[in-house]
Image (cartoon, rainbow, N blue to C red; front, side):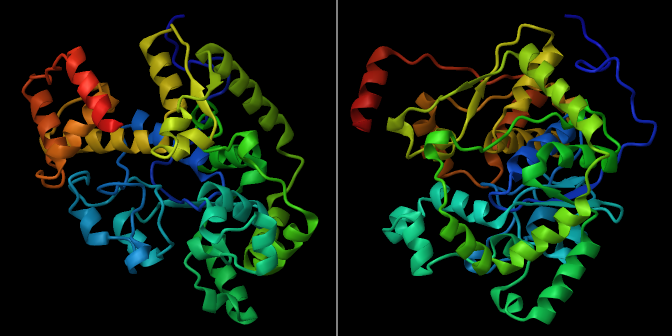
Length: 400
């Protein structure tokens, strides 16, 4: 298949407005935010835009020790542009408007996503193994009253104390309405993607998405009516926020564009040769629980290089894509390498992880990216050492 200006939608109209390049996405927990994040990462990667990236992991703050978003660290980060301002801020952090404004542009579009609250908690319960922590089933935990309150509104910066007072809650929701240009709804993902596309003036191809971090059916549980009612009462703040945006969402004008988006997604699925797969064995599940519990995709595409990249990035995990962007941005901003989007990149193989882990203990932050970027800048690609069978046998014996 030949390269086309627009691979999957050459016949469709290109927007006449100017695409927006500055965006803040508040990534809420268990609300389908990983699907939206993949769309945003792909757009940033394809258009060479900077993304605010943590040194490690997926969080821009450290709420466990009471730290809000780390403004100074992100401005001085080896992945930061010279201006200290990022085009996109799309990783997990509690909402702190003033801090985020210091890291982003004044004309940034602010977006977040919400989900029906009982589904949020049910997803969190199984994804984080709360049944093991509390030693109870989900329905039993609901009955005992040992739940986490208002996860969505907590992500949006509201403390539990704020949510107990009706007047403060109403005022806070009004402030959030003024903060965000668009609130997406997970249960209406296709409609949400259409709204995002029009708000950002992007193409239909830009917002094609495959569901990310969606649990396999055998790892889902179905709530009793009593559990749903209890959760909705317990998470009253989330319910009010959700209902408010669902009412404002509207219907009718979406049907044609949603149908078009779904047709394109089906075409991309077929052209990329995507198939659902379980790439992680039960033996390794405790080390990579995310990939074990959720649906994974495998790509079978023999088209052009551009198509292969598009298909691979479409199903790339959040952790893997974040690591790719770290290396790309370090190479670009620290060594000024031209065309960093053409650099080859891959995660270390399982056989090399133990050696890499031992080296990292004596290496300062950002050093490993510096080593890679230096080799590329001086045209010295890293040499792969052959691993003999004896070494493999010793490695697996030590593992056992």
